Length: 99
Image (tube, rainbow, N blue to C red; front, side, top):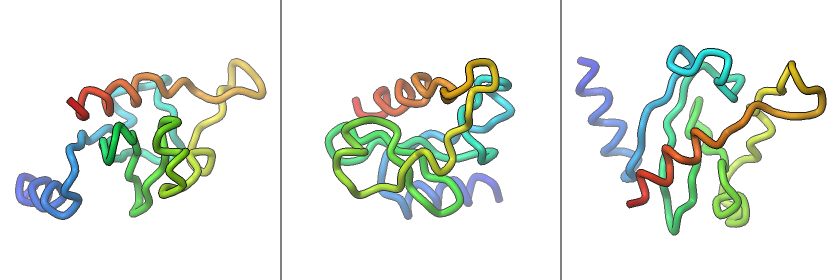
C-alpha cells in the first residue's frame, strides 16, 4: 500500500523528488513540519513540498516567485539567536535530483 502511495505521489507531481523526515536528521532538521519532499523543478529550482504547499529552498526557486516563502516553516536556531537551522543538506539533496 505504501509503495502505491509513493508511486502515485511521484506520478502526480511529475518531478524528481526525495522524501525527507525529521527522524532522519535529528537536531539538524531545519523545518517546523515533520516531513516533506525535496524536489528539483524548472532550472535547478529546489523546493520542499510539505502539507500541500511548495516552499523555495534556494535562490533560483525564490527568485521565480512561484513558491511560498520558506520562513513560514523554517525553524529558528536555538543555539544562535536571530538565525535559522542550516538548510544546505536539503539544497544538496535537491541539486543531486537535478542531474
